[in-house]
Length: 142
Image (cartoon, rainbow, N blue to C red; front, side, top):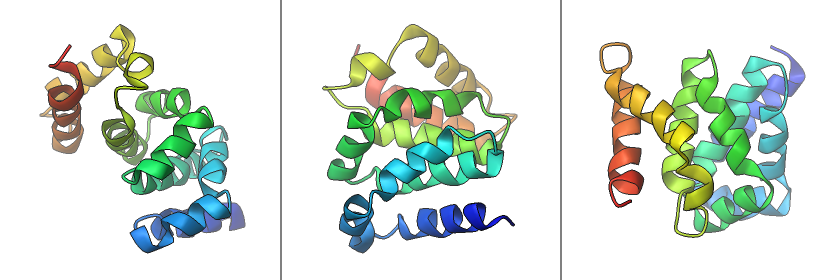
C-alpha cells in the first residue's frame, strides 16, 4: 500500500471517534479527505469519502465539509465502481443533508441515482438500505 493510501486510511479510521472531531478540524484533515476524493487513485477516493462519512455525523464537521465544496464531490462518489465508496457517499449524504443545503443535494438527477440504489436490493442490500433511509428522511418530505 502506498504511503498516501496508508495515511488516508488511518485518518479515516480516526474519524470514527467523536473524541477526534476537534483535532480533525484543527489539523484540516476534513479538507484532506476532500482532496483525496479528487484523486484518480480509487483507494484514495475510497478512504477520503470514508473519512467524510465517518466524521460528518458531527454538525461542525458537516459544516466544514459543505463550506469547502464537499457536496458535489460526495455526489460524484455515487457513480464510483467501488462499492465501499458508494456506501460511504450514501451515508455521508444522509448525514450532511439539511435545510440549508437540501436544494444542492436533492436534485432530480441525484434523487434518481439514489432511487436506483434503493431498488437494487438484489445487487446490494447495504446500497438499498442506505438509499431507502436517505429517501425516507430527505425526499419524502418534498
